Image (cartoon, rainbow, N blue to C red; front, side, top):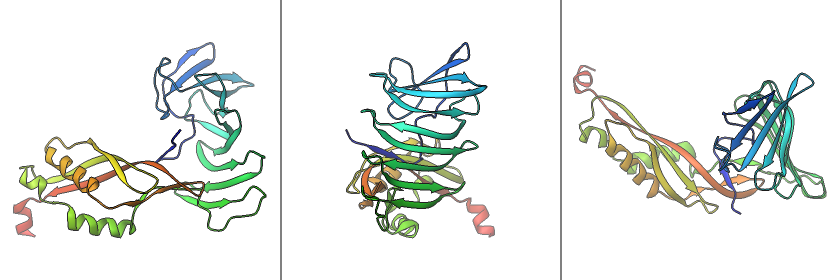
Length: 255
């Protein structure tokens, strides 16, 4: 089974929508961990009162195997607190996620023998630590726990690529009024860095040609640096925004 590494880091407790009864709530999630119905659910989160706190257990829908468990501040999947154990479909421990005031502060993965495999820690803005070890407990230098797919050359390389290949006049040529037109794109970067399945998921009403141009510039671009998870490349679902601007001629002449 292929693993898809998402842009935003989640554990399997996010989403909304519940079926509450007698201090017990059920939340259903798809394989992409988006809220869904019971019939199409990949996992089910059951939340119930325990010692004046909310306790949550998440199960794989197909066989009722335990997926995760932990404490919540409220009867709300978006309020985790403390340590959450997360298990693979075969029942083995996958990782432990630690939360403080509803914010993810660290994740630790483990080998089958129980030894720690990797650790990643966060503050409220970014990653602050990444470490990894082999199965005998020896630290691996320059270990990357998690990294998003990224354009080669970073932001500066991305800017230069757009300047060279993007038709910035698309919005003006389409007769769009003065303003900024943002296109939100979704695409997949595979383990080798190749881009596929590019589509515009948010298209400006006044500049539909902007979406086509944005899709073309992503589809026709070079390989990206693949995403990394536990020091290995993984498939990555990316989100990218591209803006087009139309300048008011009258204002530009006055300037």
